[in-house]
Every structure is written in structure tokens, then in C-alpha cells.
Image (tube, helix red, strand yellow):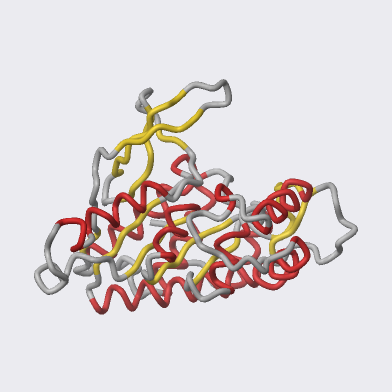
Length: 281
């Protein structure tokens, strides 16, 4: 396990690896996504029912405040930025909430739309919470749905769990897949819902998640369902930040979610140390 870095050390790591600071996410892609989210495009709202009052301008202003993108409206092309101090502040807030879950021995769901990069981080958190006495829930295993391909065809996606209970999607090729979709988390919550099972809330009161740790549509669907939700989002994914602004998401950590998995190891150690879940040396 990577030792937990200090705040200054982690800040330097974030900037050096381009997880925060000057990031590789194109500004033009950011602005396109802000415009589409503000227009109500479901794909860019991540399962959240956001207020219709968002405009491209107010989304940009919100992303400056909550993510640290460039505030210059004339900056239309090139790379963008994520404020590393916002990343650090929100990592600490995430660690605090995860630590509370551990002390309360809460029910937790953990899921990622970025299995190629973020899975080890989520697995470490899931393992630590399980060892602390939490229950990491794994509902709707094997649930499937179809997505449209760019060529007019259909591909199957299946809900699977990596070791320690991290939900993700797998295709017919048995490879894990990136997704923005809220549908898998919605399926998980339907299975856990007392009304879906025909049981009364009183008969099934202890299964509902107390906390979701996730990203993309997995986090959006959980926050929309009223579950305490902490998660990660890149600067081209404004929906979770908007959800936080509207009080539906508790903590959103801004970072580039597509760098090498090994670069997230210091963040993982920082979160677990903040949560009081760092392994004994």
C-alpha cells in the first residue's frame, strides 16, 4: 500500500501527473458538454433531474467555482485546468464521509464508469470499508441492457462486480466498458427497493444504501435517489458538479479520470488516511 502523502506532496503529484492543474482535457470538449448539459440532453445529465435554469454561461461559472476550469469565456480551444486545491479539499471531504460510513458500519454501493483507470482506487476503498464492518452491496448482478452503437447496431452490457464489490459494465466480449449511463445504478436500486420486491419498508429497512461512492451516471442516479453520494468527475463532466450545486450530490472531486491507474495510488492512500482506514504499517 502506498504511504499516505502530505497535502503539499499530493498537490505536487496531482500537478506532475496532470490529474489536476493543467490537464489534457480539451477546452472545446468541455464547452460542448456544458452546452449540452444546459440544453437538457439526458446523456450529459448522468441520471440527475437538474433545474432547467442552467445556461452555458452559468454552467461555466459553476465549473470555475467547483472545478477550477479557466474562467476566460474567450478561451475556446486548447487544454483546460482543474484547481488542485479544490481537488485536495474535496478529497478530504470525501475521506471524512467515508470515515463516517466506517464508524457507522453503513451499507455502501461502489461503482465506476471508468473501470480501466479507477478500479484499483475503488477496490481499495471497498476493501477497507468491508474490513471496518460495512456492507458493500452487490445487487442486480448480471442485469443486462442494450446500447446503440455508432453503426446502428446494438451491443449488450452486463452489470458485473470486480473483487470487493465494485460495480461496472461488461460487454459480450467479456471486457469492461466505459459508461456515462445511469441505468445500471437504477437497476441496482430497483432491486434494493422494498416497493420493487413487494415488501414493506418496515420489512426491508436495512438494505437501502446509506452511501454511494461512484462516478458518471452511477453517481448521478444514486444522488437523484436521495442517497448520500461522493464521487469523482472530470472537467468535461459538469452534471455531478451541477448536482452538488443543487444539493443532490454531497462531494464531487474534480480530477482527470483517464490517467494511468498507478497515478491514483497516492490519492487512494490520502482518502483512506483521512477516513481513518489506512492499513497499519
